[in-house]
Length: 140
Image (cartoon, one colour):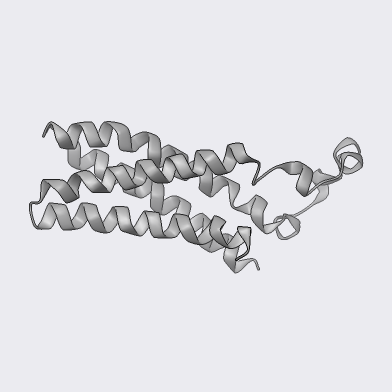
């Protein structure tokens, strides 16, 4: 399996699993599933942090030092940007979703006010990353 394939398929599974777990727990009043949703988004944040720090989006894979020095990258359009580089904003959104999942989990666990808002914000950050990936896939 190609490494690039995991970069755009695995996060999509995380996003939908987190959303489905949160909705199922809310509809069926099952606290375990309501807590599982933020945990899945937190794991998505860890995966995105690992991918970013691992060098999956390293510019050295896309540009040569001569291109960077001559600033040729300013002239390029969105279509010329490599596919993997187009995924980087999605991974920042997933990282943000993972960070939002921590207070979401705490609010859900302690049954505090504002927990539903945090669940929605966490899911929206994940969905934003999902649609960035969809936009990048359309450019292929």
